[in-house]
Amino acid sequence: MGDPKKQRKSYETPRHPWRRDQLEVELRLLGEYGLRNKRELWRYKTMLSQVRGIARSLLGASEEERARLEREYLAKLSRIGVLAESASIDEILDLEIRDLLERRLQTMVFRRGLAKTVYQARQLVSHGHIAVAGRVVSVPGYIVKRDEEQKLKYFSHSPLSKSDHPIRKVVAAAVAGRAVSEA
Image (cartoon, rainbow, N blue to C red; front, side, top):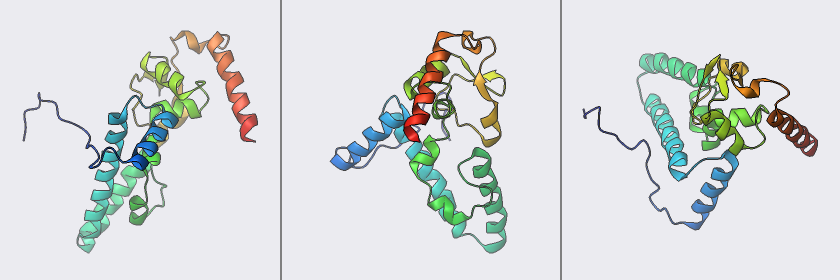
Protein backbone atom coordinates (compact mmCIF):
# COMPACT_ATOMS: atom_id res chain seq x y z
CA MET A 1 0.00 0.00 0.00
CA GLY A 2 1.19 3.45 -0.77
CA ASP A 3 0.64 6.84 0.70
CA PRO A 4 -2.78 8.13 -0.46
CA LYS A 5 -1.38 11.65 -0.75
CA LYS A 6 1.12 10.63 -3.40
CA GLN A 7 -0.06 10.86 -6.97
CA ARG A 8 0.40 7.90 -9.29
CA LYS A 9 0.21 7.62 -13.04
CA SER A 10 -3.14 6.32 -14.22
CA TYR A 11 -1.77 5.24 -17.59
CA GLU A 12 0.96 3.19 -19.19
CA THR A 13 2.94 4.56 -22.10
CA PRO A 14 3.42 2.53 -25.28
CA ARG A 15 6.48 0.29 -25.44
CA HIS A 16 7.52 1.76 -28.79
CA PRO A 17 6.21 5.34 -28.79
CA TRP A 18 7.73 6.39 -32.12
CA ARG A 19 6.26 3.80 -34.51
CA ARG A 20 4.71 5.60 -37.46
CA ASP A 21 1.52 3.52 -37.71
CA GLN A 22 0.87 3.86 -33.97
CA LEU A 23 1.45 7.62 -34.09
CA GLU A 24 -1.02 7.99 -36.96
CA VAL A 25 -3.72 5.97 -35.19
CA GLU A 26 -3.26 7.91 -31.95
CA LEU A 27 -3.37 11.26 -33.75
CA ARG A 28 -6.55 10.27 -35.57
CA LEU A 29 -8.20 9.27 -32.27
CA LEU A 30 -7.09 12.53 -30.62
CA GLY A 31 -8.78 14.54 -33.36
CA GLU A 32 -11.90 12.42 -33.63
CA TYR A 33 -12.68 12.47 -29.90
CA GLY A 34 -11.23 15.90 -29.05
CA LEU A 35 -8.74 14.62 -26.50
CA ARG A 36 -6.34 17.10 -24.97
CA ASN A 37 -3.18 15.02 -25.23
CA LYS A 38 -1.94 11.45 -25.62
CA ARG A 39 -1.88 10.88 -21.87
CA GLU A 40 -5.66 11.09 -21.94
CA LEU A 41 -5.76 8.45 -24.68
CA TRP A 42 -3.28 6.23 -22.87
CA ARG A 43 -5.46 6.37 -19.73
CA TYR A 44 -8.33 4.80 -21.65
CA LYS A 45 -6.03 2.24 -23.26
CA THR A 46 -4.85 1.25 -19.77
CA MET A 47 -8.44 1.05 -18.57
CA LEU A 48 -9.31 -1.21 -21.50
CA SER A 49 -6.29 -3.37 -20.77
CA GLN A 50 -7.43 -3.79 -17.16
CA VAL A 51 -10.97 -4.69 -18.26
CA ARG A 52 -9.61 -7.35 -20.62
CA GLY A 53 -7.23 -8.64 -17.94
CA ILE A 54 -10.10 -9.19 -15.53
CA ALA A 55 -12.02 -11.03 -18.25
CA ARG A 56 -9.04 -13.28 -18.93
CA SER A 57 -8.66 -14.05 -15.24
CA LEU A 58 -12.37 -14.95 -15.09
CA LEU A 59 -11.85 -17.48 -17.87
CA GLY A 60 -9.29 -19.25 -15.71
CA ALA A 61 -11.38 -19.30 -12.51
CA SER A 62 -13.29 -22.31 -11.18
CA GLU A 63 -16.84 -22.88 -12.49
CA GLU A 64 -18.96 -21.70 -9.53
CA GLU A 65 -16.73 -18.71 -8.79
CA ARG A 66 -16.56 -17.85 -12.47
CA ALA A 67 -20.35 -17.88 -12.90
CA ARG A 68 -20.91 -15.50 -9.98
CA LEU A 69 -18.08 -13.09 -10.82
CA GLU A 70 -18.86 -13.14 -14.55
CA ARG A 71 -22.49 -12.20 -13.93
CA GLU A 72 -21.46 -9.29 -11.67
CA TYR A 73 -18.77 -8.06 -14.05
CA LEU A 74 -21.00 -8.21 -17.12
CA ALA A 75 -23.71 -6.31 -15.19
CA LYS A 76 -21.18 -3.61 -14.28
CA LEU A 77 -20.00 -3.21 -17.89
CA SER A 78 -23.56 -3.10 -19.20
CA ARG A 79 -24.46 -0.45 -16.59
CA ILE A 80 -21.59 1.66 -17.87
CA GLY A 81 -22.91 1.11 -21.38
CA VAL A 82 -19.82 -0.51 -22.87
CA LEU A 83 -21.55 -3.85 -23.46
CA ALA A 84 -25.08 -4.99 -24.25
CA GLU A 85 -27.07 -6.54 -21.41
CA SER A 86 -27.04 -9.95 -23.10
CA ALA A 87 -23.26 -9.98 -23.65
CA SER A 88 -20.87 -12.82 -22.93
CA ILE A 89 -17.36 -12.88 -21.53
CA ASP A 90 -15.94 -13.27 -25.06
CA GLU A 91 -17.40 -9.92 -26.05
CA ILE A 92 -15.33 -8.23 -23.33
CA LEU A 93 -12.21 -9.43 -25.07
CA ASP A 94 -13.51 -7.93 -28.35
CA LEU A 95 -13.82 -4.41 -26.88
CA GLU A 96 -11.86 -1.63 -28.53
CA ILE A 97 -10.62 1.76 -27.36
CA ARG A 98 -13.43 3.46 -29.31
CA ASP A 99 -16.05 1.70 -27.16
CA LEU A 100 -14.70 3.46 -24.06
CA LEU A 101 -14.12 6.80 -25.80
CA GLU A 102 -17.75 6.84 -27.00
CA ARG A 103 -18.93 6.77 -23.37
CA ARG A 104 -17.08 9.97 -22.40
CA LEU A 105 -19.25 12.97 -21.51
CA GLN A 106 -17.48 15.13 -24.08
CA THR A 107 -18.30 12.69 -26.88
CA MET A 108 -21.89 12.19 -25.69
CA VAL A 109 -22.52 15.95 -25.66
CA PHE A 110 -21.29 16.19 -29.24
CA ARG A 111 -23.21 13.11 -30.44
CA ARG A 112 -26.44 14.32 -28.82
CA GLY A 113 -26.23 17.62 -30.68
CA LEU A 114 -25.57 19.90 -27.71
CA ALA A 115 -22.33 21.21 -29.26
CA LYS A 116 -21.14 22.05 -32.75
CA THR A 117 -17.78 20.22 -32.48
CA VAL A 118 -16.10 17.88 -30.02
CA TYR A 119 -13.85 20.74 -29.01
CA GLN A 120 -16.83 22.96 -28.24
CA ALA A 121 -18.32 20.05 -26.31
CA ARG A 122 -15.17 19.91 -24.18
CA GLN A 123 -15.41 23.65 -23.55
CA LEU A 124 -19.10 23.49 -22.59
CA VAL A 125 -18.45 20.64 -20.18
CA SER A 126 -15.41 22.19 -18.51
CA HIS A 127 -17.16 25.57 -18.15
CA GLY A 128 -20.10 23.97 -16.34
CA HIS A 129 -22.84 24.35 -18.95
CA ILE A 130 -23.71 20.63 -19.09
CA ALA A 131 -25.70 18.75 -16.46
CA VAL A 132 -26.07 15.01 -16.02
CA ALA A 133 -29.20 14.05 -14.08
CA GLY A 134 -29.59 17.64 -12.87
CA ARG A 135 -26.07 18.11 -11.50
CA VAL A 136 -23.19 19.89 -13.20
CA VAL A 137 -20.35 17.66 -14.33
CA SER A 138 -17.29 19.62 -15.42
CA VAL A 139 -15.03 16.68 -16.28
CA PRO A 140 -14.95 15.93 -20.03
CA GLY A 141 -13.69 12.40 -19.38
CA TYR A 142 -16.61 11.46 -17.13
CA ILE A 143 -17.97 8.05 -18.17
CA VAL A 144 -21.71 8.42 -18.77
CA LYS A 145 -23.70 5.44 -17.55
CA ARG A 146 -26.49 3.96 -19.64
CA ASP A 147 -29.29 5.27 -17.39
CA GLU A 148 -27.78 8.79 -17.42
CA GLU A 149 -27.77 9.11 -21.21
CA GLN A 150 -31.31 10.48 -21.41
CA LYS A 151 -30.66 12.92 -18.53
CA LEU A 152 -27.93 14.77 -20.42
CA LYS A 153 -28.80 18.42 -21.06
CA TYR A 154 -27.78 22.03 -20.54
CA PHE A 155 -27.59 23.08 -16.89
CA SER A 156 -30.72 24.99 -15.85
CA HIS A 157 -28.77 28.01 -14.49
CA SER A 158 -26.55 28.26 -17.56
CA PRO A 159 -27.26 30.96 -20.13
CA LEU A 160 -27.27 28.18 -22.73
CA SER A 161 -30.45 26.71 -21.24
CA LYS A 162 -32.46 29.41 -23.03
CA SER A 163 -33.43 28.30 -26.52
CA ASP A 164 -32.79 31.74 -28.04
CA HIS A 165 -29.09 31.77 -27.08
CA PRO A 166 -26.87 32.46 -30.16
CA ILE A 167 -24.71 29.38 -29.60
CA ARG A 168 -27.78 27.12 -29.58
CA LYS A 169 -28.86 28.49 -32.96
CA VAL A 170 -25.42 27.83 -34.45
CA VAL A 171 -25.36 24.33 -32.93
CA ALA A 172 -28.82 23.54 -34.30
CA ALA A 173 -27.72 24.62 -37.77
CA ALA A 174 -24.54 22.51 -37.53
CA VAL A 175 -26.46 19.45 -36.36
CA ALA A 176 -28.94 19.85 -39.22
CA GLY A 177 -26.02 20.16 -41.66
CA ARG A 178 -24.40 17.04 -40.22
CA ALA A 179 -27.64 15.07 -40.58
CA VAL A 180 -27.97 16.12 -44.23
CA SER A 181 -24.37 15.21 -45.04
CA GLU A 182 -24.73 11.78 -43.38
CA ALA A 183 -27.92 10.97 -45.30
